[in-house]
Image 1 (tube, rainbow, N blue to C red):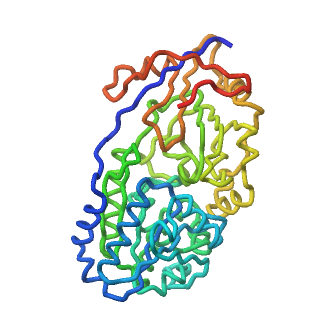
Image 2 (tube, rainbow, N blue to C red):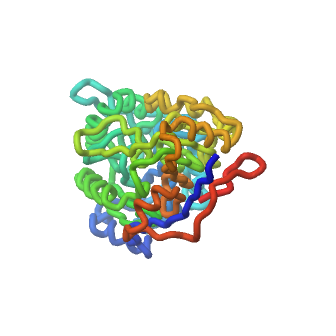
Image 3 (cartoon, one colour):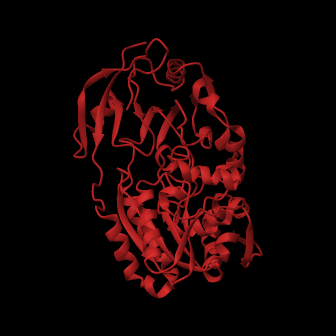
Length: 417
């Protein structure tokens, strides 16, 4: 094989972040007059999802303290639909991996898959809601606002999704996702509106992260302002979201995928694969072959999204928990995202197969990108043709000199981001 040179580059993204999270949360809760919403002695549930949100421990701990100082008794509710194998124990374990435990938060975690029916949509669909949350005196909905991995709209992943999918538990999440990408886009908010009318929702706290996973913005919302906050933060998210340095590549090498990285293991907003969008909302990248090398430890065998890849390693395949993966896949209804790609004995074999199948003319230098995962795109490796295209951009900096793309005695890449 002809020598392939790769250069490590740094992408410069929006750096602004919140330095004092407790003070910011306190200010946000003052803005919505939380003192008037929480009364002494109330049992208040605080939602925590399954996503790997940076500073989640600090944020949840601060929310706990804000509730306590108003005389109420807070507890944590796992709000993650069918994740964690759709069991109370599994969801507790997901929280444990996020560092959210009864010991670290100083409050109980109450986990159950039981739901109640709060009402019905105009089309007759029932709205399911976590039974424990429904019996609380109040609920504080905490979630990150970000782009969804299946559809494009003005409201995607955020406070509304936490209400309709996260707190719907397995039954509610399954129902919402059963409508498909278009149904999810068009009815998710409608489900949440019923919840806001019928459930004891006190307020929400929207989290927006920058490209470095730092907490970029925190925005509290009274129940009537959930839609406003979800829309505003999503618009800002789309402005600052990280991306690959180019949208046209022959081979994308992804070192790891997992549920702690993205709901689809690797973010479809980065690698392509959005199911539903309106004209002008989404411009997918053109990537001929995607190679995935491994699963994250935190995903615990959940390989949902593996179907987005073309080639994987045997090492990754051996880590897949099919039961957990299929449970998540059936709930999401996107069966193609659990399809097993070609399994290769080594990273070297995967790369050689990719090179043989990108349909380039002989002598054409391949356009290759290597990333750690779709959550961390500050530093990536690019091959010569891509470097030549991006080297004069203001947000691009070279890191070191050229490296040769090669393999060790085990057939693993000698380069790692």
